[in-house]
Amino acid sequence: MTDSNPSNTRDAEYLSKLQDYYADWKSIPSYASLCDVFGIASKSWVKAILDRLEKAGFVERTPDGMWIPTSNFFARHVADASVPAGMPVMVGSSHGDYHVIDDMLIDTPSKTTLIPVKGDSMIGAGIHDGDLAVVEKRNLANVGDIVVAIVDGDFTLKTLGKEGGKFVLRPENPDYPVIHPQGTLEIFGILVGLVRKYK
Amino acid sequence: MTDSNPSNTRDAEYLSKLQDYYADWKSIPSYASLCDVFGIASKSWVKAILDRLEKAGFVERTPDGMWIPTSNFFARHVADASVPAGMPVMVGSSHGDYHVIDDMLIDTPSKTTLIPVKGDSMIGAGIHDGDLAVVEKRNLANVGDIVVAIVDGDFTLKTLGKEGGKFVLRPENPDYPVIHPQGTLEIFGILVGLVRKYK
DNA sequence: CATCGTAAAGAACGGACGTTCTGATGTCAA
DNA sequence: TTGACATCAGAACGTCCGTTCTTTACGATG
Image (cartoon, rainbow over all chains, first blue to last red; front, top):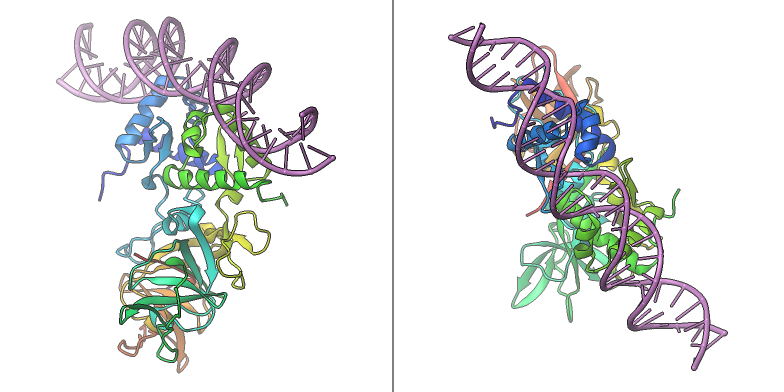
């Protein structure tokens, strides 16, 4: 277990108030506003609290000195598998990271796009028809990456391979042929994540 | 519905840069820092940009005047598979959907939790070791649902089946045995989504 | 009863921040 | 070539912010 809990009981209280505020506004306000949030009247004490929360690993600062939450700040949504049976963690209370999944999968939002998967040519890699591919747009890829290439004006999702010095697009399904692109191979992006919705 | 796209091409560019910055720092910095982010030197122009992005519905302000992102800010473009080759998907393009992944997968946040998948017992359903299962907590499930059950104090992900009037937990991998639970079968929740991160 | 530590309040200060105005480019159409 | 408009740069200004320091209240400890 990490030391990720506040040293004293009051700080835990302040932390939850801060979490509630953050859930509403997605930002940590100025010390003056935090006085209202915490229900105290002293800016210096607010700073002391935040310094302790920083030490405990719940908040940190940007290069500009602005306070931002760390991942510890958010209620643990990922259950610990070793939790005793019966009553697993009370997760999912109101304050939680609303954008956890997006954050996990997406590093550079401006270069990331979602592309629905059609067909079962990648089923060997656990990629099914109807899945949503999280694709980071870029031109370069390594052999072994799963890439989105543009073939005949259509997106196609395949593993990038190499045969005899030439790039090929390898499906992960024996029923489909390996694609040997003539001319240049146009790569749209590489697969960085996969999302599937049931029901 | 707001007109969720920037009025001009420059603003789309600035929005991208802001989104990338936010992905790193989870906050929108001061105008001075935004000058660096945007690559311009004029605070007043930064303000003008943010004002326009506010009008377009990508950012808003807290009561303190602090800039914060809206949900539109996080939305991601779902590419239309028939997009012509070579054409980069633009932020402001009107076709296609925008989605926040969390919104897609999670209906009731308070009842939804994420559980890491261990082992390959469900590999036949395209669920691999290391994937993240999006689980909605509930006690009831139908035959055929993929459920998270609690067996010997551990979470286990299996397809719910029925044999001779009794519920069984069926793995999607011939190497694993069907589990015949003695006594009552404790169901933690049902699988509503799956997330995988590559690299 | 004296001392210590915690939990705050409050004032004082310098600087950074947001706002507004004015000016300088560039571009396009008329 | 002239004007309109978009795109920025720069400076001026008042306010609010973060920091630090001093002081107060209060419970526990001894």
